[in-house]
Image (cartoon, rainbow, N blue to C red; front, side):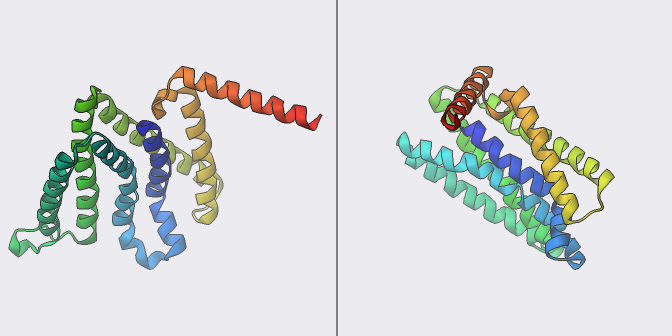
Length: 213
């Protein structure tokens, strides 16, 4: 179920990231436009938290707590250095990148540490780590393309603002739904899962119709 939960999280995170400029403008105002790049990156942060939480459960369930500890400590040490490098002044051989640098560091470290955990877990369970890595990338790319297309189409009919955001969300949701239904592998499902879901929905519909009659 990890790919499915990852896909659901990416659905929300990618849309928020793609609409960050509008969201910041509506909520905070134009004077906070400089916060858009960092906010756009931070919107993606929850995506890999799905893998992190579930991978952590696997470590506990398989009694690999020592390995889990070592990965966590190493990630914290590397993250501390990366934070200093991203924020330190250039005179101190840092990037002096401010909030954007810190956001980049947080998202990058999240992706790296989670996939290190994934590598150990898939190796332990005899699964293909390449499939999971490919799925992570494909989902985000496809959702971003859909989000941008939805935003463009919404812009043809309405001006930028809260209405544009809502209209984009509706188009995005419909497109993601159609894509997921015709391409269930995108959510880590099989065609057989789609068939079972269709039968379940049909059975519930018939049950409700019978109750009304």
